[in-house]
Amino acid sequence: MIDTSVIAQLQRWVRDRFGIVYAEAQRESFVQRVEGLCYDAHIAPDALLARVASGDDALARRLGDVVSVNHTYFFREPEAFEHLARVALPALPAGPVRIWSAASSSGEEAYSIAITAQEALGPAATARVRILGTDISQRALEHAEAGLFSTQQVEGMDPGRRLCWFAARGADRVEVAPALREMCTFRRLNLTRAPWPFTQRFHVIFLRNVLYYFEREAREQIMASTWEHAEPGAWLVTSLTEPLFDVKSRWQPVRAAIYRKDP
Image (cartoon, rainbow, N blue to C red; front, side):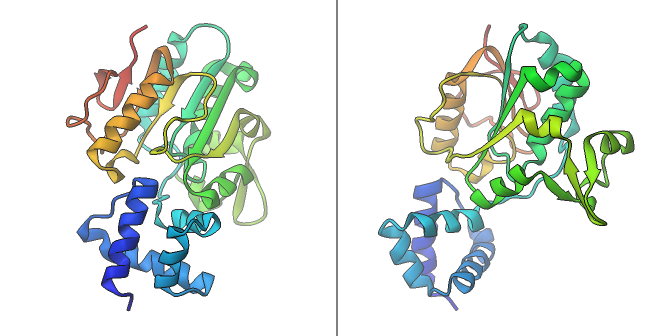
């Protein structure tokens, strides 16, 4: 069993480095993730703590991989994608469209955005829409870049949509269409480490199912930074499961989980 003081110090380090907070009820999950990393890396927990605290970036990234929560699926909360198709995309000015999936995990959200854009804008979306997916987990990003998913991951999708945008790769895997991959780029980013390295602002930002892992101060900083990196008239899409009543923000609420920056 891992010493409780080591676990407490690792939790503090994860909070300070990644902004991820594990509540007491989640402590066992945290312990299991750390134990799994220690087993794979052939390292004791106290040595893990010492190495990440002393600046071992490779090991720190592996720790970030295991403590980040990467549960996601295609078209999660379909209301968000309906709003994107029916309201947000038609309201944007002509020209390039930049969309950011700010906690993209293994890519399901970014590719769902790409499919929505293709269906709303037609083939022109391939050249017009650029989607950036970022996550703290390098492992999840590598999965996203590969564009390969299990058949189970697309089972709940509309059959016509599935056939249009995915090709079978063996008996149990599918690959996203080249047009979708052309629209999406994936990069590692720690949301709590501002300033972010963006040179252009976004027209739509998806910031979903991630803010509740951060303390209120971090949530406010992230919301403020997304506003700064948004074009006038841009849209912010959060999650129905994470109301932001306690977070001060310059974003203007439009409806549940939908915000907009004044034009």
